[in-house]
Length: 481
Image (cartoon, rainbow, N blue to C red):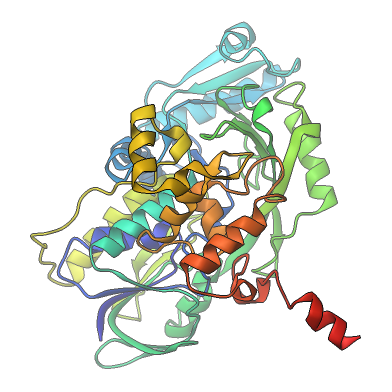
């Protein structure tokens, strides 16, 4: 019997797990995927929103601003990359200034500091590559950029170090209320818990509706993105938005913490909660829309495209509360943008909610900080020498695009909740994220994974088991002919 079971190992679920791991609680985190950060958290704009867009008075607005203010401290404590580069919302006609003024007022009501409206000449001083049609801009200096993988993994690792148990490839199938709490039937057997925290992203409505008569509905809202090569990374220094519309904040252009340029997302509601396929129409829309805010975006330098799903709740609001007719079942649902920004504050909010429902006793040995994975090529010469003396594999480059070494990959595999798949290695080290998109480094990475995980290469997957890359040997194939 667990005290708390968290469904979902995305950034919200892991932030909650980390905060609750401060206390004398037996915690389990269940996720159907092969790794943490495999759902909504893996494919988003990688930005820290200032907080101007959420409707004043909403939980979304409150947690957006609180999460933004916490981000710098949490990035230091948990050792993940974060840059406060600022953002700009641009309009392309005089009548658009009214929209900027509305956002400015909303932001001030939400507690966002330092915002101001710029005319075209002032905006160009900050961003010379703004499109010729840009008329004015709202500047939000508190906004930032982040690595969503690193942040999610950092929270998960710290939670695991503090005793939270992670059960991956464990799909929750049914939830039944009992006198003692809840029984969760999964693909790996039965789990029991006093409390359940539902942080299941686009599936949060499915689990809520299993235990509550007061139904909620979440729509999977797909967004296509294009990632450009690092040669395009300096085109803008701020995150550039257009004025928001009914479907969200629109197509943005932003640098990434790793030096690339990101364009996206589109916004298309889909019925299939696994539909992360990009579309030709979506990618064409990105090319057309980004040109309205930034000129000469070099779309020929796109190195990959991808799509993510946002968990859009019908009321466009975070639902973070105990279900009214299901005692001990806590929803963390509808966590769409600005969910990544809000995650640190969501963790604290759920912790406080738990404290109102049960007694929480602090641990004396809680580990507050976590040391991240520092890649060989990012270290000083002295640090590199020490790393080479400890493990000569740091001298063998595997991914030439991102200069990732064999030692880096080995370290990623042997960390808490270490990588077991190609995607797991990629998100921890960036091996396979460069220009060739794993075209050259995949065989060697598979070899290292097989060796370090004591498995055959035929067992190595891109992510989940159906994604095995090797299906047999040449001799096997010849024998079948």
